[in-house]
Length: 282
Image 1: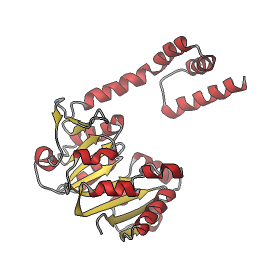
Image 2: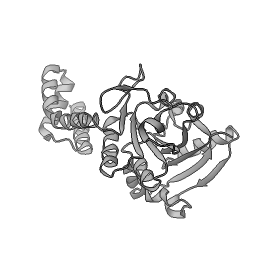
Image 3: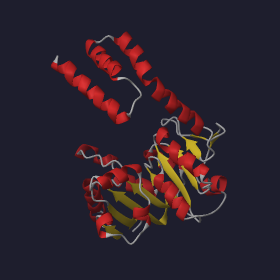
Image 4: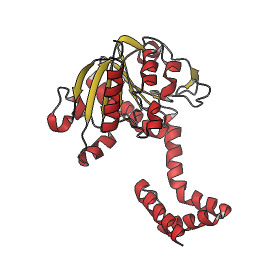
C-alpha cells in the first residue's frame, strides 16, 4: 500500500507541474493500474487522459511544418533538412544566400528553447542574421511563430541535435554563438554533454570564422565554473566576465533586457546569473 500511495502522490505532482487537463481520479486509477500491470486498461485511460495535450502538440507540429522560417532534421541518423514546402534542402554554406538573401553576419543560439534570445537579438540587430537551434520542435514553435508575426526576416529556426551542427553549416559560415541557460548536466560523467565542453568547442571551430565570439549566460554556478576551467585549461583568454549581472550590473543592456522563460523563474528564486564572452580562435 505504501508503494501505491507514493506512486499516486507522484502522479498528482506531475499533473500539477504539467497542467494536464485530466481529473485526479483518472490519474489515481492510472497509477494503480501501472503498479498492478493491467496494461490494456492502463493504455486506454492514459490515452483519454492525455488526448487533449497530445492533440495540441500535434497541432503545433503540423503548423510548424509550414513555417517558412523553420527547417527540420527529422532523422538524426541520416541528417537532412526539410523546409516548409516539405522539400529536402541543402543549406550548408547557403544560409545567407538562400534563406536570408543577404551577406550579413550569422549568429546561432544553441539549445534555444522557445527562442527568446533569437527573437530579442533579431529585433535589436537588423544587420545580422539569427538562427535558434533546438532538438525539441514544441519549444521552437513559439519563437518561430512570434518571429513571423513580428515580421523578423532575420530570424530563423533549426530543429536538430547540436552535435550535428557541422552537417548543416559550412566552415567559416558562423560569426557568433550564444549559449543561454543550457543544461548544466550536473553529474561528472555527463560533462561531455555540456555545451562548453572541449568536444563542443572543437565542433564550433568547424563552422565558425576566425573572429567568432562565444557568449555564455547561465544561472548554474557549476556550468559557469566548469566553462571558466575549460578556458583556463586551454589557455584561452576571455573578453568579458560578469558575475551576478542583475545585482552588480552589466555593460551589455541586452543581457538583462532579453529574458528567457526559465530565466524569469531563476531571478524570482534569487539565483545569480553569470556571463562570459570569449573568442573561439586564440
